[in-house]
Image (cartoon, rainbow, N blue to C red):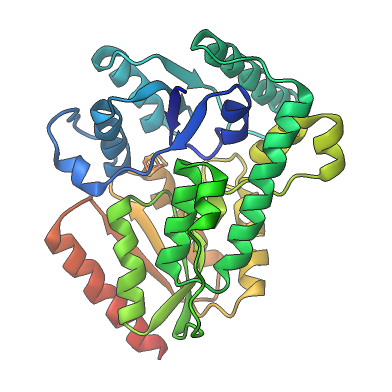
Amino acid sequence: MKTIIYTCPYVPAEWIAAHGLRPSRIIPDAAGTTSQAGRTEGLCPFVQGFINEVMADKKAGGIVITTVCDQMRRVYDILLRRCDVPLFLMNVPNTWQNVAVQKLYIDELKRLGRFLIDLGGKSPSDDALAKIMLDYDTARTSILTAGGYLPARQYAETIAAFGRDAPGETLNNITVPELQIEGVPLAILGGPLMRQDFDIFDIVAQAGGHIVLDATETGQRGLCAPFDRLGLRDKPLLELASAYFCGIQDASRRPNSGLYKWLKCRLADTAVRGIIFHRYVWCDMWHAELQRLKDWTDLPVLDIDTAGNNQTAKQRTTNRIRAFLETLQ
Ligand code: SF4
């Protein structure tokens, strides 16, 4: 079975799986950003890591890239010149409020379907798609439920494994610790994390905190909305598009008020006392969101900007998180 790799949360794994191919969402390793294989100047470390990871992957049968930000769009042009694996550039509109753009997203899913069929996939029946959606939805619900009991790093790794592997494999590996996790409750907000960035969860725990809300793109915020069971039965593709396109809130949306609405609901469910704002240098989109977040919330915000894998940067992040938690304890 061919593996189709991607990283953007707006690519529905269910749609790829329903075509009989294996979806795998990649979270690059920061170490890859120092590799020279696909080195390109001026890219955010996440995009650079993604390019290197994709170019090193010898098993991928196809790659899906989206247009959510300019740098990701550039990945397509770079890979077109440097990589032999079939590529698909999926248009994900930044505006979302009218029916025309929602229809455009559905048309893009249909175009993606034709790409998958060209790669050897099969056009799915509504029943087949609905069954796969149900499996994924059940797994997502279990992961979100377990999230309240898991250490923050384990929760982030479980979500990452869910994107990378099949839902069944992920659920078999969830083990909930017996002791309740303690520490100053914090949220982390920002774009995607690289695998190396997961160390932040440990740094926070060692400094006396606990991340109870992972609102990064690779965390809980990157999971689509739950499926409506009636919609899933009657019009599964419409329901899939709605849960992803309207259900995932991101800084790239225009307007992105939904991101703050989503955040407000999640913060109300927790006792968060501070927010770690994580962004990469060269990411203008999330940088622009920092001041808006500070104006929007009464909670203290710690800005962590990072350029990738670098021991000095890690020590700087550690010191800043420790100091932040000292002020909250
Ligand atoms: S971190 Fe920023 S620049 Fe990088 S891919 Fe995400 S949105 Fe684009």
